[in-house]
Picture 1 (cartoon, rainbow over the protein chains, first blue to last red):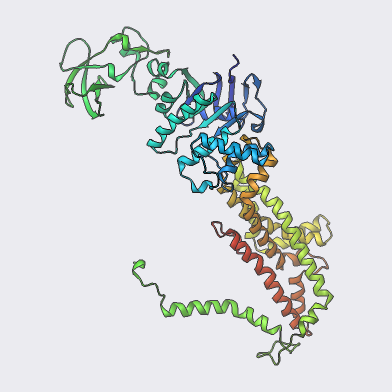
Picture 2 (cartoon, rainbow over the protein chains, first blue to last red; picture 1 turned 180 degrees about the vertical axis):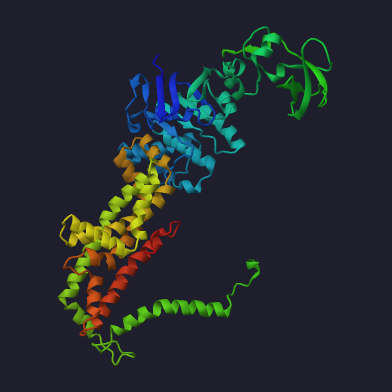
Length: 332
Length: 271
């Protein structure tokens, strides 16, 4: 099957800055794809390359098998939901939504019907006569979504669409976006710096750093088997084990990662395991996170509520099952 | 604490404010009064008699009409040039970032900061150096230097408030550059352009100094008035024309004020 979007060795350099550096990427049709990374990692530039706002310095971009390099944004069957929504303040909601149809020359009656349908899809029926300035942040977001969907794009790009919303609304929109994507079957490409958002919404996640993709995989793969220290650190809160530590306790001289819930704390001063000292405790509700100092290495363990808790300053011994240690690809 | 004070201003302040306003506007009213005087050789207070004959006299003087026509033409063409160049310049400065952007921004604004006499002398020597004969078009060029600034200042303030992603959104939704300009950019900067254009027109219409240096034999209205003041006959004709100038200049500025009072100040209104 032809991928919806494919990048072959795509680079976008701004002077000496390699915003995107030799990225290979394939996004399947109908997929909910997340690009995750810290700011400046190149994820937004990748999105803008798909939209056509940026052109690659080198490499090949295809959208549904057709070359996209040099094609202006207005000739791509791709639409974007912008981070700041970018609604037109001089037009009312209905005209905002119908804008794409208006510039294509669709008759007024037909486009107002299509706009009303799109507004119903994002649960804002009857809001057509209002101006964007009269809407709340969450409503503006829905209008931006309707405006992008009214053109029936084959790929919908979302640039941190939930960033400006409060937590409650964000969670609600996450669910809605996901069900909307299932319902419409459109390929969604979604940029975020929030790993929780990426893991909970996407079918597959690409983790970006320094203009490169560090890892592509399902949320489970990314979370359980991070390929590099960066991924382990950025996605979730794994303990990162340096090669020396790994050699002593896991028998391999490689970088490793270990999830906090897989560390057991024994209240004894000697014995098999890693000697450590309790540095601090933080109560999380379902459990308590214990910060540990193991010969200069800072580790975190999570103890379920109800279990016996050590006190700060206690000397303890840490044990873990070697099968739970994930050995990363990154060379030592 | 200022918030604890009563709402009423002290009497001294009121008197001072009234005196200030009178000082600003009384001379203009006196100019208006002299338009109706019967004494034509010098300004005598109080006017010896009241007449409206000077309106008819002014109406029938061809030199007034020539000067007025020239001024309107110069102001109109300078404004059109300023609208095109000022908008393009503002779009370039606010839409992109490039090396020397701030310098260019400063260079564009400089003509309005410089005393008019320097602009005038500079242009005059440039024109004679290039052997361009003084004409209608040299006046227009001179006026355009400061008219561009006024339009630029208004447009750039509005461009800054117009988010760049709005233009990208328009392109993203299928609009080409022309459609984006027509449906998104123009509606958003329109009132700023109208305000800047009117202000540019008003500035050009009453310009004296730059015009003195860039005009040949032609007389714009303000230049004509200056010449007329040293002549002994039909003095009140100048006052009638002055009234017209005040009204023609005042109306667009007032309109510009109402068009942009929701946020934008009329940048460059101090010239």
